[in-house]
Length: 77
Image 1 (spheres, rainbow, N blue to C red):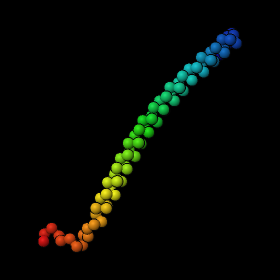
Image 2 (image 1 turned 180 degrees about the horizontal axis):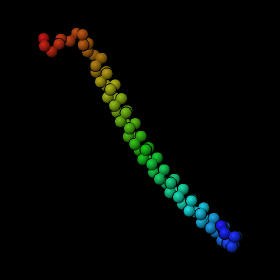
Image 3 (image 1 turned 120 degrees about the vertical axis):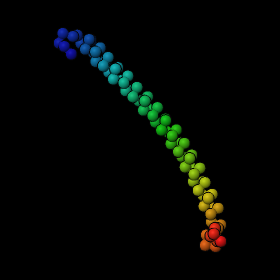
Image 4 (image 1 turned 90 degrees about the vertical axis):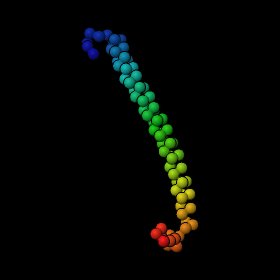
């Protein structure tokens, strides 16, 4: 600030700088919020996929418990 500027001009200039910084911060917060919402959607999809895979593995393990590989004949017999 120059010495010839009135106190009102100095306050107005500083207020303009603060408003500019605030606008940039609001934009950044909006971008971060959008990114977090997107990551939350991805996390939900991955969680559902993991539950499905866990259920399928559990089903396969239950089906597999019924047979004994030592009692089975090899395919060439």
